[in-house]
Figure 1 (tube, rainbow, N blue to C red):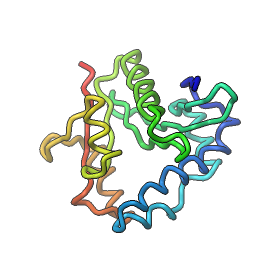
Figure 2 (figure 1 turned 180 degrees about the vertical axis):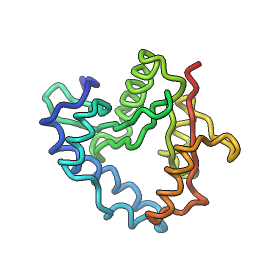
Figure 3 (figure 1 turned 90 degrees about the horizontal axis):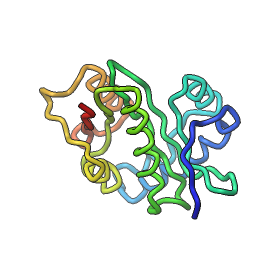
Figure 4 (figure 1 turned 180 degrees about the horizontal axis):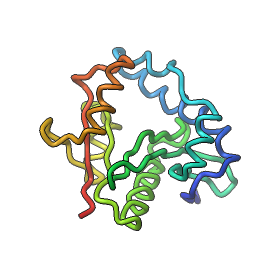
Length: 172
């Protein structure tokens, strides 16, 4: 299957909520997190705003169908991954890895210091996936202010704090 990673275009915004909803269905595998599969996701307008800020990439098949996306923001010379979603139909084919590799390459070209994210420490498609990509779990004393804020926001949204973690891939 031929796939390309490219910067998202305004016309892509309408497809991104459905991809995120489909990807979230994976949470049904964990009864304590199943509610996330039915949670609200950003709408097309919110995705359009992120696309206009220039930090959204999509995985596109040769036929033009979008398989996934990665949304990030630059904070303190670091690229922070806010969301990585791959449609259920395309999961397990390396699309997430290709999206993440594209974001890492972008961060290197911009001479950023690191790529960061927050995720579940115990779900195989979360922290273990990122560790295979070179990310390390951060100890509490090593967590930057933006990551502390992200973790606190996630707990306020209802995510179990004891299962969340911050990770970093240093680019130095």
